[in-house]
Each structure stands twice: as structure tokens, then as C-alpha cells.
Length: 111
Ligand code: FES
Image (cartoon, rainbow, N blue to C red; front, side, top):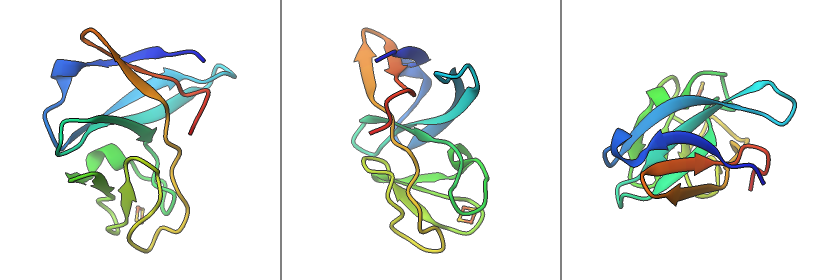
């Protein structure tokens, strides 16, 4: 497992998301949405909506869901599963841990 620095805990308020680019195992950049849910928990999911290839971090966080701004699909931040059509495929969810003030994400081992 390779955890990389993704954000500082102070970067996100509740129900906020931000886009970061991390390094994949093959050296290619991986777009990741780091999200803080309504309960203050942090999540990391692949930033690209599985329906139309747009950035999920530009969408709205609703409780423990993120809503795609383009067609309204909602993804569960814990599982990546689409909970609202039109998306039918899940987004990858990445292991995340907090180390002091740092939010660390492992993009090599999607859950
Ligand atoms: S592009 Fe995200 S729901 Fe269509």
C-alpha cells in the first residue's frame, strides 16, 4: 500500500469536495475526489462520473452521497455504488487515512 498526501484536514468543510491528482502505480495521474460528508468523515473516490466522464468533485455532497452535476446520478461515498440513475456503474473508492493534519489516499488499492 502506498498512501500519498492528498489534502490537509482543514481544506474541507462538511459536505465539501475537492479534486486532487495523485500518482497511479503505472505513473499515470489518477483524478481523485476527496470528500467530507455531513458527519465530517473523509472519503476518496475516483473523480470521474461513470456515466458521462465529468468531474464529480464539481457536484454537490448530500449526506454520504455525491451528486453528479450533469445528470444527477448520486454515488455512495462509502461504496462507490450509484444510488440514482442514470449511472449504473460504481466509481472506485480508495483507502484513506488521517495522519495528524494530513489526509492520505492509496490509489493503488481501490476497495
Ligand atoms: S455525467 Fe454524471 S450522471 Fe451523467
